[in-house]
Amino acid sequence: MARVLAHHEVQAEGARPGRNALLLHGILGSQMNLRSFARRLVDAYPQWRIVLPDLRAHGDSPTLAPLHTVEACATDLRELAQSLGLEPELICGHSFGGKVALAYAAAAPSGLRQVWVLDAPPGRRVRERSDALEQSAADVVAALRQVPVPVKSRKDLIDRLLALGLSRPIALWMTTNLTGGEEGFRWKFDLDAVEQMLGSYLTTDLWSVLERPPAGVRIDLVRAERSAGWQPEDIERLGRLEQSGQVRLHLLRNAGHWVHVDNPDGLFELLAHSFATAA
Image 1: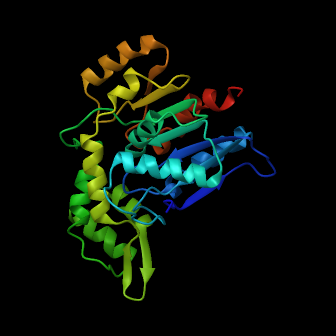
Image 2: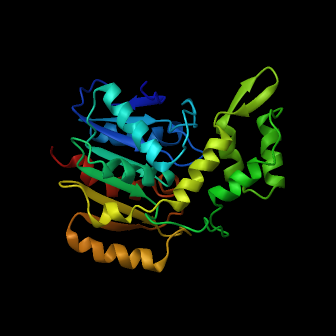
């Protein structure tokens, strides 16, 4: 039986787009996080349709069968594209979604020409580092484990998360992952599956995709200037791989990990070339 991911399609009003892209959210997110940015892209480039999926165990998508890994998410996307009768030319993913995009590209699906990886180093990581500028997904999951659900209200959730040391922006963001019921609010996501996916993100090494990109596929990576996740050796290694002509690393200034929120104009300018390029 095919995997069924909830998804939303964005296209310019009155347009008949002939080109298709996938835009992927990160861990603990949903397609809602990227709708405004996707709308901006298709309004500027109406020849494109952007499909925004909820990754497994996130948003309105089902948890699906384990194992809950980066590769399983990539398989979900290939099956979603097949069910929609689409051959996406471009896939773009943020954070966890960036590694999923690389894993999707590794299978060299027909029609794929461009991959964008937004602030997701491609190698293994011992643990996400947290500093004053950025709270890691691991920190957030640990806090969520301490919140009994259902919660009475969104304000109750915010207060609990602030007391556990999360920042107010993160606490406010978590309220977008609530769904209401008679007993109160529960998570939309499956926290057990999400924690497994985070573990897969930290232990999955996708340097091989960059060292041997599929024929005809260009891979662009974006490093946020204030992101805590990049190591000097990552940057040096990508600099060497740029000589292939298929891989390129971009620095997005004035941005932390949440690139589409911190500097949407700069991110739009980076991606614009790929969307403007003729088929």
